[in-house]
Image 1 (tube, rainbow, N blue to C red):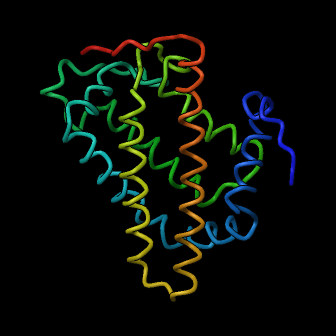
Image 2: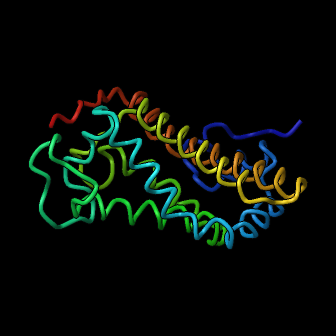
Length: 203
């Protein structure tokens, strides 16, 4: 039985990612499979991004989080939720970031730098990074990740891969998305442990 330093899981990002990857069976072969799918998935990224934002804009509970200034965006802000469209410059800015994220998943080296990036993806949706007024509740992040997972796996199923490659690819991405989900939820858990109660960002 392997001994795990559970306290270190909460303080050492690399140790945490390594443990979870080992536990789930996510390793070099999975990374190779993900990279192997890049050529087929990359051209479909724009349609994936559009599908995600169509979903996000179909509920006020998710759309309202695009009203505060997004980290790194310096343009004008939307006037109100009702008039906010996907053609607004802030939304185009956010869509470009999602596209880069999806592309990074299938092209980047899976090293310390990528793990820090995946962790920031979670942190930046809380007041602990970026704009402190941007506070996306965990339930909305879970909804988003569930939708992204289904959309991505559906895309893979539509690539026409041979059965063995299709199964390997789906399993690799499924494990990767669970790793990403942990690097999102851990920031919400930290806020709860610290006794910090997030306030809803009104619009």
